[in-house]
Length: 247
Image (spheres, rainbow, N blue to C red):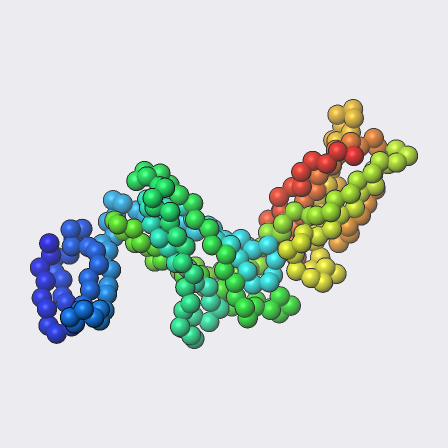
C-alpha cells in the first residue's frame, strides 16, 4: 500500500503503485461526500491496440455532423467519448461505452464502437475548424486519454447505393439506382461519383465511372452488376460495393 496522509478532506498518496489503486471515498457518517477512482497506467499493460495516433478510427457517411468511431481494447475496460467543435465552451456531455467485461477474457481483444453527433454542424457551410473527439478509457491496469481533431471531409465515406434496378433488353443493360439513404441532400448539391462493374455470360468483365447520374445503359449480354460511390469533391474513400445483382 502507498503511504498516505490525511488533512481534512484531502488525502495525499505517495509511492503510488498497483496495490494502491481502486476507489477512494470520503464519508461523513453514513453520507458519501466524495469519491475518486485511482488507476495507475502500467506501460506493460497497454489498453488500446495500436499506437495512440492510430488506435481510434472514425468514419462519416454524410455531412450531417454525425460520425462513428471504433477501437479495440486489449483487456476488459469501460470508455466514454465526447464530440465538440468548440472545446471548453460548455461542460462536456459524455457518451459512455460499456465494456462487457464479463464476456471478455484477459487476453481477448474486444471491439468498441460509438456514434457521436455535432448538432451545430451545417453541411452547406465551409468547415474551417475541426471537430474534437475526446476518448477516455479505464481498466484494472491502465487508462487512456486521447484527443483527436477531425474534419468530416477527411473521413466521409458514403454508404452503398440503394434501389438498384437492372434489366437486359435488346442486347443492352439498363440500370438505375439511388444515392445512399444516409447521404446528404439535396442530391443535386451533394453530387456523387459512381463506379459500375459488370460481368457478361461469356466471362467478359467491364467497368464504368459516372458522375452525378443515377441511370445508364451499356451494350452487351450483361448478367451480373454491382455499383459503389464516392464524393468526388474531396476524393473520399469509395463506399462498399452493393451485392452482385443478377440481371
